[in-house]
Image (cartoon, rainbow, N blue to C red; front, side):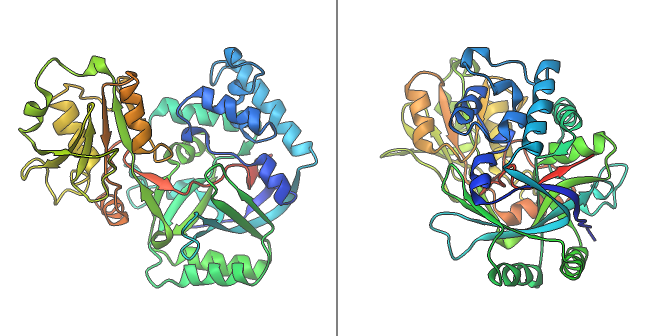
Length: 411
């Protein structure tokens, strides 16, 4: 049974206008520091000035080193300005109902319960009975970078996205009932026109009921924010900021790939691919597959790849995911790029579409684009239940939790 506790000292925007000013994507939603810098120019008061302080500069040429002592000093001063400024207030012992509405999906909003989750409930080799299941390998350097930032600013800013089964629908019903009964404390629209609404509560009876609903769940799954939860554990903190969402309200979007020319050998690429894939030419424009085991390839023309029987084990939940098949059978065997962290590979989330990927190849910046179907929630949960790891960069949950709407102050 997972645990949710209230945030002892929650820093929140004073109103919706302040939420507009402070809110930002999480640090890991960007393709480059230049993108962060550009957004900071457009939203100068956003929490990015503290979460990505090396990009908070007047000129793009002055972007600094992420994690440097200088950037951490700047992060500390910027967070102090946010805490002491007129856009925020502190609320004690708070949980919050959090709803995100995507354009065109107004009848199926994503709704969850925010608060603090426990680091000692994360399942690890030394804690095999932990009820919060990770499904992604942790890069220690990345987690340590987030830990240093958290320690410097004395605030937990990045929220971890947790999924729960909510098999009966009781949690979703309770959250929707609470939200429909009152106006939100704040609402804001992000860069993709997703509407974010927050209802704060520190009513003891409401808090107790919501805590009991989370405790009734058998387990939770880390959907987004493995490194943020690992950073809290690395620091020895008891809690980390999280939102628990019923899995049925969540959506996984495609996570695609670009390959640099230096990674592609001088061979007949399509002939080499036909060893493990059925290869079929596609007419028309950019292609983003939706069906499992249909993969798009662009090399100046679009092709459909279907993995052949025997190239993966469907009983192994992780091997059944197309990102793993592409990594092993395409990148590993054909390109001889066996490490997913190879710098010649670029992973592109669903905030860039297939037309953008094609444009990158056509412009000569990359040699190949690979478009993958989205992982299903069933595939995602099956990997968790097998205590396995998702293939790297295989799940892009949408919509993303907005950073800066609720911050946990640690002092």
